[in-house]
Every structure is written in structure tokens, then in C-alpha cells.
Image (cartoon, rainbow, N blue to C red; front, side, top):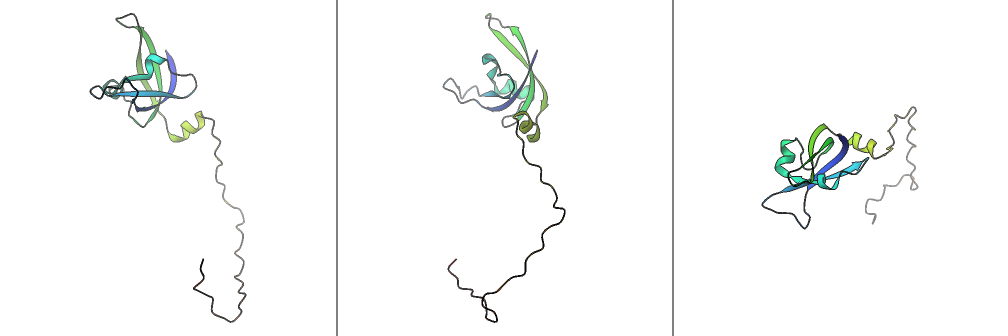
Length: 123
């Protein structure tokens, strides 16, 4: 059993069959997902709890299929939050800090002392 971090998108490759919709599991961090596990039927993905447009931590368990190919069982371990995705991808977004002593606004200075401000400026 191996663990992967994936995002789920609709499969639209040249082998896509509109009668049998499928999803594409794209690795977003860590090891790439095995080729034979990248595309799966939409119905199978939904039964496992995978939704298009979301990201997950999943486990894959390999087993021998009927034709001798390696197939995979998918188990969803956790849906990932945006913060977790950014952390996995190594993002270091700055955290806003409160300002200790906010600067005081400077008083407005009019260069036309005593006159009405112009309101028909072209900008």
C-alpha cells in the first residue's frame, strides 16, 4: 500500500468515452501516481468518495487483474484543505501581522489655500 496526494479532474484524453465518463488523478505532491491508477471510471471514483475538483490523500493497493495487469484499489484517507495543499507544494505565503503602531494620517495640504477644490479634473 502506497500513499499519494492527488487532485481529481475530469478525464478528457483522446481515449475518453462520453458513454463511460472517467476522472484523472493528478499527483500534486510526492511520488507520481502509477500510470494504470491515473484514470478511473467516474462511478468507481464517486463510490470511493472522490469528487471532481477536490484534492485528497489516498492509498493505492496493487493487485493482479484478470488479464494479468496490475490494478489498484483506491482508498480515500483524507480530503485536503487549501492550506494543506499549499503546505505540500512548499508554498510559504506571508502571514499578515497586526500593525503595532499604525501611522497617523497626514493632514491634507491644499495648494490653493482658500479656494474651492477643483472637481472637474480629467483624471
